[in-house]
Image (cartoon, rainbow, N blue to C red; front, side, top):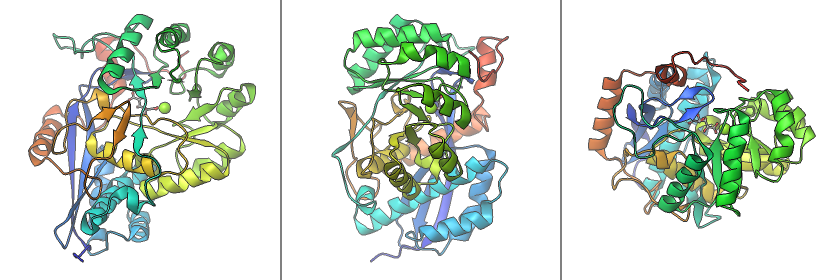
Length: 410
Ligand code: GKR
Ligand code: MG
C-alpha cells in the first residue's frame, strides 16, 4: 500500500463572494473567509479539508501542522495529543476544535484516497443513500453597501419576499424543509413570514433560528403562536438556563447551535434539558469522529440530532454529506449555506442537490479534488479584500449607520 505518513500540510486562507444576508449580529460581508487544508502523504496522496478562518485559527494551524509530519493519516489519537500540546489553552477554545477539524477531515480524505475507500465507508458505512438538506432562508439587503447593483435575490424583508426566496431555492434545489434565520426583524414580522411560508408550503417542516436574539420573556410570550407552526425552534434565547426555562414551558422541541457546542456543554445542557435537538457541526466539534461520538451521546440521552452550517464551499459540503449519510442517528434535514455561494474551490464546479438531497460525489475519500486555479484566485481575493475576521456588525453599520449590536435584541 502507498505510504500514508504525513509529508506536508498546507493551509490556504481564501475569501469567496457572499450575499448581504442578515442575522441578529448584523450582515454578511461581501466576502466570507475559509481555510483550505491539504494533507499530503509520503505516497503523494493529497487529502482535503475546509474549516473556518481568522488569525487565531491560522496561527493554530502554523503551530500544529509541523508536529504532525511523519505521523500516519490514520492516527487520530496522535492528532488530538499533538493538538492538546500545541493549542491548549487558546484564548478562544472554539478555535482549537476548528483547527483540528480542518486537519482531521483532510486525514480521512487522504486515507480514503490511499485505500480507494469513501470517507462514509471509513466512518462505518452508508446508512442512507443521500444526505438530506433544508433550504436556509435569510432576510437580506438587495445589495452590499456601496455597490450599485442589486444581486439576483433582491431585498428580502417582507413575508412575500421571504416566500419568493423560498420558491427560488425550491425551484433550484428541490428542498422540502425550511430554516428561517430570525432575530433580525421584530418577532411579529418574522412570525408573519413563517405563516406565509406555511400557507405557500403546507406540508413542509419549518424551523426558526433567532440566534439567541429574543429575551426570555419575549420567547415565553411567543410560544403559543409558534406551537404547531415550527418543527423546532432553534436558540430563541441565550444560554443553557434560559433555554431550559423555555423548554420546560413548551412541547415545541428546542434546538441549539449556540448553547451546547462542545463536550464541556453536554453534561449541563442535557441534564437541564436545555434543548431536545443538538445541531452537530464537525467544524465546531473537532471533526468527523468527534461528531459521530456526539451522535451516539445524543442517541443514548434521547436528544435529536441535526446539522449546523456556516458559509462554506464544496469540501465542507462533501464532508458534511459523508458524515450525514453515515450517522445512524440523524433526526432532521441538515442546514447548509451552500446555495448562497457562487464561488467554488473544487474541480467540476458546484455540487448539485436533487430534491433537496446530496448524492455523494463519486470517488474515494470525500470524492472531491482541488481546483488549483480557483484556489489561487480565492486566495488572491483573501489578500485583496483585507478581511482577517468575520465582522457582521461593522458591515451592518455600512447599511444602517446607527445600528447597534444587541443580544438579545427583542
Ligand atoms: O450565516 O448569518 C449566518 C448564521 O447566523 C450563522 O452565522 C450561524 O452560525 O447558521 C448559523 C446558525 O444556525 O446559528
Ligand atoms: Mg443556529
